[in-house]
Image (cartoon, rainbow, N blue to C red; front, side):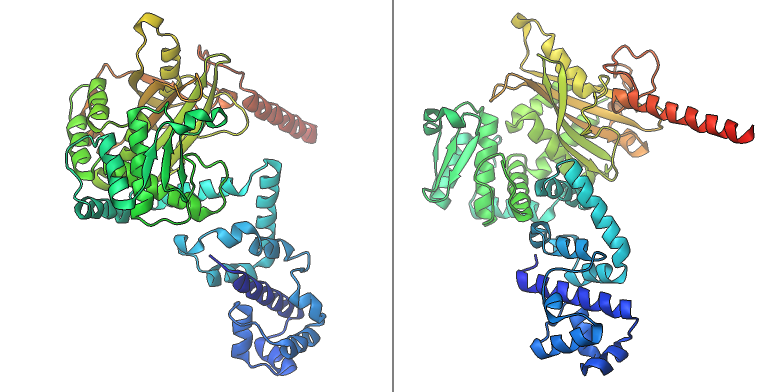
Length: 495
């Protein structure tokens, strides 16, 4: 991350280079006019040096501007958007080095083609404003890209979990018990756990947990089930063992103050699921499950019980291990919430590895394809008779995308959401079907596995006679109308 001094140097150097290029001065010519050596001018333009007052005055005279302009954060219209970005909170807190981008490389891009970069930054800024995007939207997108770069497998955290097990002599019995996790926090980090006091404050009944750094107390909501408690306990162990200082203290981050905070939350959560579902043990379980000749959903339920984890924790953990251990890199994970009162479905989490796969979040308030197993399984939860209600459903389908050669094995789990909302939610793991997947997942040949043609949203779907359609294809209708206008104009030209 850049500090204020580095940012000031970058802005000053950007101005000098831009003005020099506008004057069409070579480095030697500017050196002759100012008395500054060429190597020093190079360092100034790269943001490495910040000259003293007399040298700034010499540069101002040579470039035809005044001193105050050079030392201010104001710039010409051509490069002001770049200056604004450099001194923005986003630029200050975003860890460029995490993506292998040094400030020098980024600055070189800025200064080499300022007009084009200016236009690009202006476009991003306008999109962010028009769609009311905040810094946290960029942070979340950056985190998902970060996960994609590493195929969502982080060896350093996996190794940290093994070191934790060895150092603290963690029991190998599965699943890890709640009381045992509480004892690990108390014994090794002097952190106590309170499951009762939050109930006395109804205004925070939707908060799952809160860590008091001052009191060294982890408060847990009494409405949590055991699997949810275990995740939060193991997550706190992750924060402590990994020594992650910049972190959220609430379970769900109401406000993302920095990318480091978001990243550390991810790292602690990854540590948690890796602790609860040991890597090698789960890899073997996945291998046995995949080698079944027929689709057997009860085997997944048994694995949830074996590790005492939620469906979301389990499928998220598969996104860590499938790419690294099985070479299955083309996959997506998504979470859907459904409200029975208005039949509304919202995608609340997504992850795509290798490419942007077909099911993705759409911010235009369109209707997601009701043929997705992610939605069908929630609707199945709604339709259950009260006396036969099952708290967990598991379904799978082969999804063939309309007007595309892509097909996915989609495994979905849905549960009744008792915490904070009466709605239901589902989590889905989608695996692109190719030769490698067919070799690993033998039950793909099971004729009992349903096959559905699907699309992204109803508004963008040309599928005829779709019984599940929830909205007319207005986006396609606009495209068709535009094409009619175009053809009519061509006819007019020929007359």
